[in-house]
Length: 229
Length: 244
Image (cartoon, rainbow over all chains, first blue to last red; front, side, top):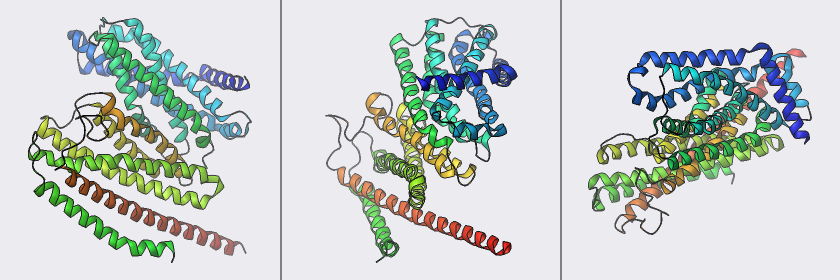
């Protein structure tokens, strides 16, 4: 029970910090929007509806992945100011509560970005999904968590590294490749209606399994990372 | 006799033995074994591809176990932890060598048999992922500040180790383009008796060679650590003399 309270306190602190500055969300939103516009310019989506359906899933996830990397790099940096992180290391609260609180806060930010981006995608890419759209309500949060949980972890890992901004994508991109593959396949399957529900189902199970494995690994290892001397 | 001198005496015979076994394996694989019934001479790449693929799944676990040992000893026994870290680094480098060989020979075979260099098959993707993870591992060791490098790398190594069983099972779970497993793959697997010696000689040769490189690299890293500690000690002593 007290673990849950610690978690909630950390989450509330991160949400309040973001609410006051709105740095991450604004940055991510604009970045994701730029990626969408650049891809929209690079190939004319309105002219080729079936091609558009096949690539939109990939573009959506690439945009979200890049956007979350920009935010994740910042998310621990604010704890470094005034030695806040040192203070948190000394508190009796479990380290994994700090990690989970931070990851949940990042998750909320990215979900907000997704909610704003979805209509923009539909307008810019002239999308008419052919599959079960409600499945996206499952795929998007599961896939986002896969990116966020590892991203938050590796941002903490690289926190005291020399070139932190470079290190995060170097670590996060290979680790999230399996999740990215499953997310893109499932999303494309839903948008184009090409995959049958059993295949989409197995991709979703794949993301869920990935989430479980890596969330466990991150929670178990976070204390080591936080106290890395 | 100290451990170091045993290693030094054993090194040359070991290297010569592994090279000899590799020569025998080469002769078996290229000249003695009959060509594969289905694939012809291109099938001979199998004797290099499969041993390196199998070893590319073994050395990551050396790295993983050494990293776990490092994390365990990090506070309890820093000197042992340093040794474990050196072993982890050596194993990661050897793992990259075998993954690279496996990917390259696989691509050559794919070009000849499938007509394409690369496909996003599960096994191929998992192997590429393993390669990327170990390149990232070495990158972390270069980019992070001294003092935290080992911990950060050890944690990353645990993440990389998660890919290994998935990689091993990938051709058993999903039947896609990569050929079915030859060993431990069920009733239809296994190979013809005439092919077995070539495979076993090559596997033994590459395993011996990889172990040799692993130990060589480990000893080299230990010397680098010793030199670093020496330099640190000299610096501390010099600073003490100034203050007196």
